[in-house]
Every structure is written in C-alpha cells, then in structure tokens.
Length: 454
Ligand code: ADP
Image 1 (cartoon, rainbow, N blue to C red):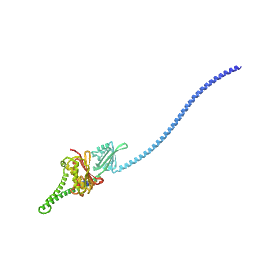
Image 2: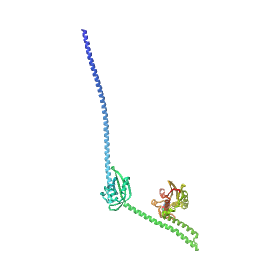
Image 3: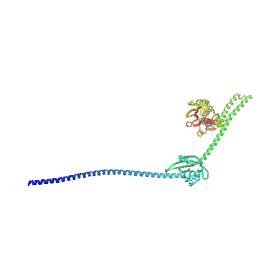
Image 4: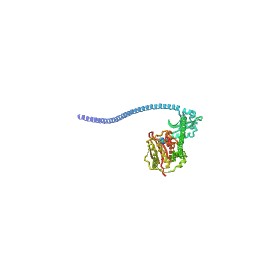
C-alpha cells in the first residue's frame, strides 16, 4: 500500500515538476518579456529624458530668441524715433532753405545736371532779369534770353558737368528789355536725393562795379597827377643845373671883363659838375622813354663775375653812405659768372644801394646777400630805413612814381631809379621785386637773374 502510495506520489511529483517546469518556462518567458519591456521602457524613459532635455534647451533658446527680439524691437523703436527726428529736421531745413531761396538777395537757378533744364528759379532772379518763373522753367540755361547771348553758355554747362564748379567774377548778362547787367556767377553741383543738381548763384555787381570804376578812375587821375607833377619836378631838376651853368658862365665872363668874381677854372669845374649831373638825368630820361627794341640793342652781353660786380657797387656807394654813417656789407657772394651788360648791371645795383642810403636813417645798415636756386641767382638789398607803405609797394617800379613826393631824397630824385632797375632786370631775363622788411621795418629789394654762360 505504502509503495503504491509512494509511486503515486512520485508520479504526482513528476507531474508537479513538469508543471512547475512549464510554469518556470512561462515565468522565464514572462521575465524575458518583462525584461524587454523594461528595456523598452528604459529606452522610452531615456528618450523622454532626452526629449525633456531637448525641450528644456529649446525653451531656453526660445527665451533667448524672445529676449533678442525684444532688444531688436527696442532698437528699431529708437531708430524709428531717430528717423522721425531726422525727418523733422530735414523738413525744417527744407523750409529754411526755401525761405532763403525765396528771399535771397542773389539770383538762384537750379538746373538738371543731365539736360541743363532749369528746374527752379528764385524771385530775385526773375526780378533782376525781368523774366517770369514760367519763362525760366523747363528751358535750358542757354535758351533763356539772359543767357542766350552768351556764346559760352553751353561750354559753361559742359565745364559744370565735368568739374562740378564754375565761377565768373564779372559776367555780362542782359535783362528781358536788353539792358546790360554785370553779375558774379558761381555755380556748383551737388547730390540731392540721389540726383545731381546744379545750383547757380547770380549776384548783381552793377553797384560794386560802379564803385570800383569810380575808384579806378580816381586812382588813374591821381597817377596822372603824380606823373605830371613828377615831370614838372624833372623839368625843375633839369633847370637847376642849367641855371647854375648859366650863373657860372656869367661869373666867369664878368671876370674876363676884369671884375674879380670867379676864376674861369673854378667856373668850368662847377659847370663840369653840373653837366655831369644834367647828363645823368638826361640819360635816365632817355633810357626810360625809349622804345623797348631800341633799349635791347644797347645791351652788350659779356661774362660778368658776380663777386667783383658787387664789390665795385659797394666801393662806389660807400662814398655816398659816408655822410649818413650807413654801413654797407655784402655776405658770402658766390664766385659765379652771369651773362649780361656789366654797365647796366652795375647801374641797377647802384640804384638800389643808393636808394637804401637815401631812404635810410643815420647809422643805418645796408646788407647785400645772394641766394642760388635752380638756374637763377637772387640778389637781395636789405635796409633798415624808412620802409615803404603797403599801398606804395606795387607802384614803386613805375616811372615817375615816388612813394612820398615830399620826401627829401637829397638830389636828383625824379622817380626813375626803380623803373630803370626793373627794365635792366627784365631785359636780362630776370625780375625785380620789393617787399617790406621784417616787422614792417626797412625794405628788401630783390633781383632775380638767370645764371647763363656763354
Ligand atoms: P626816386 O628817384 O624818387 O628815388 P626811385 O624810382 O628810385 O625814385 O624810387 C621810387 C620811390 O620808391 C621813391 O620815391 C621812394 O619813395 C621809394 N623807395 C625806393 N627805394 C626805397 C627804399 N630803399 N626805402 C624806402 N623807400 C624807397
């Protein structure tokens, strides 16, 4: 019995074991399935985590973008405000420009830079030239009567297109009625709203010209008066030695009649002196009144050593400067040779040094120096004398010009010395100029000469 029971139990056990095995298999499968699910879940979890992270990043970025957008919006607002302000300012300046344009006391024309057509004209120009706005507008500059007579009008426009600027100090225009109007014409081009426009400013200078003409005729009259006066002075200068000669002849003749007045020798000496003086003045006068070609023919060219030329001038002039105790010094003169007429070159420098003594103060100084430049030599004669007024400077080289005709120049001053200087310098291919010394004291006369060799 017990065995049967035992057998049954073992069978049952086997069944149970088999069952258990099945269950265990199922469990293993389930466990496997569960493991897969868990892995999937983990994957999902991980994915979710990544997504969450990504989402977090995106929202951060979104926030950043939002902030940036806010900033840009702010900037745009500021810019818009600024632009508004600029617009207001532009409007204001346009109004101001318009007012100036309308009320200007100068004529203003605006032209299209491409076609030359008049696009605007201000009331002043309408009034000045007698044309209405309609007569000006949409016509070309040279089609308007006032400019029509100007042969050069088209060329002017060409220059304007090319250079963007043109200026005429004195342009003759005509009104609609044919009256002449003198104007100053200044024109330039500028960009306005992307297009190039040309603005012409036209100023009526009739009054200014009248004043200038009056001034000029006054100056010419004064010049003429000075010249006539100078010629009278020159005549007087000539009469003095003649009178002295006559006096000496009389004295000598009286002596010849047995009266004791002046010995013929003394009289002849005095006459000789006056004749020299007289012929000096006559030589200057003939030099300055001769025709240019006659003068040119008198020049005898030779090589002249500059150093010895200046030395001779200094020695000769020292005899004159002695009385006023004026020193004459020459600085380092280069040992060069120039091509010219020795006699005339000497006369030119003597005239200048003589003037520095005549118009110099007692115990004054005259300095001669030179400066070399390419192909030229400049000789400067500087003094510390009375100087020359600014308004006289441009005229001192004119014939018969004397800066101050009441100025005692001690002797035969007839205002020819510098005219001769200028003539000699120019005939030698150079030039003469004068300027005030430093701080307006004294004068500096300069001679520019070409350095040529034979
Ligand atoms: P002038 O015979 O009168 O001296 P110039 O032709 O030599 O004639 O000179 C013309 C004028 O220039 C003089 O009258 C004088 O007023 C002025 N002048 C010439 N040289 C000098 C100088 N070195 N300093 C001041 N004035 C001068």
